[in-house]
Length: 383
Picture (cartoon, rainbow, N blue to C red):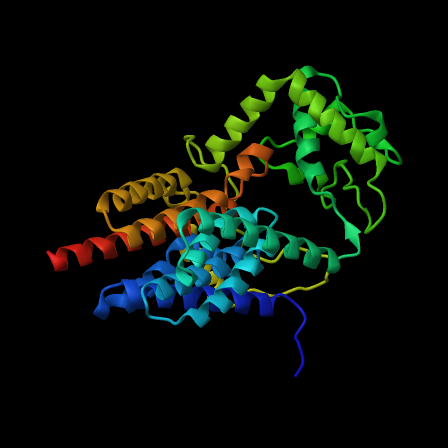
């Protein structure tokens, strides 16, 4: 058996995980005769369907957690035996490893995993969840380090982005001289030409013709470069000296990410493969072009305004808490906090404004809605 190089395998895996989890959930929670409608309707929902065809770590993480959540809910409802806890944990481990913030989304589902597998009082369950979370985090760190020969120090993107914003605001470069070791310092004019308030990666875009920043890396196991230590110190000094500028940037990013502004400016999805270091090129078949044209109608529209899903999530939590059903409350709260955990870090660190960062939040809001509607239907049937 040969492994085919390229993204096709990852694309197949994430779609298998999504559709399997989606089918399990609707088969268990949806109306008996209309479950297939729910499966197709949710899978073809434009913001979901548009990203299912893109190999992104965020999509991989979300699809793994959807299948894990489906397994856990079926275990809790006594449809599956406890041995299904093993594949659920494997999927949660994968989700924690594939994104740097994945563990924040995984922890609430680990709490649900403990609830499904072990009869522990609240405090012991919380301690066990914390210990298991630390184990998964440590395993993810070791596994990811084993897969690469270099250390990327991706936090430099956010630190440079903030310092460029402060430099343009103060009309003076605040980047430390040591950061430019081995490269030509960029002028304020050059910084302004490539600066985007909601996308740090544009500062490091080597494909563009204009000057750009270089990402600093070092071989694994070697000391942290002095230029990055100087950058980190300068970033902290900038936070202390100009807190209002940073807070203003964070608020702007938050309102952009959640679609609170009149014009939605976040990056939603791609429609073709970008040039890459692997040299992989794939053409666009006619079916792809037809799907892209159909999705274009919804692009940048209200379905991508994430404040709607945030409000829906809050409403579902309130409904579950007021229902008096302990099982429903536990499931909805765990799923909701998983969705919130996946996004809480982004406005804090000043990351880019991509809808893929909020994809799991959207999915959890729809899942919580399904859970609440199922609970309401069961309540009405029993009354």
